[in-house]
Amino acid sequence: MTEPVIYETLAAGNGKAIGVATLNAEKKLNSLNLDMVMSLLERLPRWEQDDSISCIWLQGAGERAFCAGGDVLWLREQMLKPRDQALPGLQSFFENEYRLDYLIHRYRKPILCWGQGIVMGGGTGLMSGASHRIVTEASRIAMPEISIGLYPDVGGTWFLNHAPGRTGLFLGLTGANFNAADALFVGMADRFVASEHKQALQDSLCQQEWSDSLAQNHSLVNNLLRRFEEKGQLPASKVREHYDLIQDLTDGDTAPQVVDNILSLDTDDAWLQKAAATLKVGCPTSAHLVFQQRVRGSKLSLPEVFQMELVMALQCGLHPDFKEGVRALLVDKDGAPNWTYPSVAEVEPGWVEEHFVPPWPDGVNPLQDLGKP
Image (tube, rainbow, N blue to C red):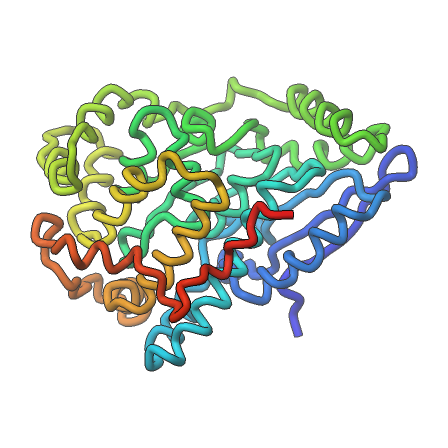
């Protein structure tokens, strides 16, 4: 049986080691499945407690993708079951995925995430919490959940709300692809390193004189990455270029207002055209959920974000649009999803509100322990 995650340790200075974790599903663009999640949930805490491990390197197998998202085909199989049978499978995935994301956010040792190639959905969740998020000239990042009837989860409520202005709202609504420069601008990456220097960077990490001080080790990684950063190769940032326009387009008090602004845009810019086109055929319910993430999530703590997102994710799984979106995009591939509501303006407020109602009979959120001793 193929291991979901490949682990190795690289000998480093002062008798220390670098722990390398490789998502091992190259043919599936390292899409995150439950086995991967559970494996990382077991290994990362062990490495955090292991005094011989000074730093973690997280990557995907191959060059095409770090992680192209979650295993939504498996999730659809759960969604097709009766509600009482669907909920346990959905919860096992989302609860543990969010626990992993939170663990990475709160990890004490340096985690370098090599964001090469495609980084989408669940991949952004893994990368966003890492202490040192590295992008390359090949990085292509997105939160495209609106196309499948979901919403930007895995902490998207947190990192999209922390992006400059309302750029996070725009990226969530449009599922727009963005590059390394965009990721640096919106705060979803820390350093740009050309992909050709990956091995040299790893070798240099192994040559460092690591200490028992967490602060010194974080500083050591920062200093090393500064030496490898080559901003001369950085592509132009579309988000930065269109920042003022994005602010104007997202200046609305309701989801229909903002969506109408974006869809009414007359532009020759191919990136903006594609963003609007994705929103136009995206799930109307998802557009409301993205807007509510900004409204309800802007003041939440990180544990509260994941608690809210677990409710939203499970309700998406129990409502029809998520499985319909996966069917249209990845199963039948007809590109013709039959959404519950034909437009954003027609979505009933009560329908949106249902996605924020805890699905558990006792109302107790399984993630209520996050952030507690």
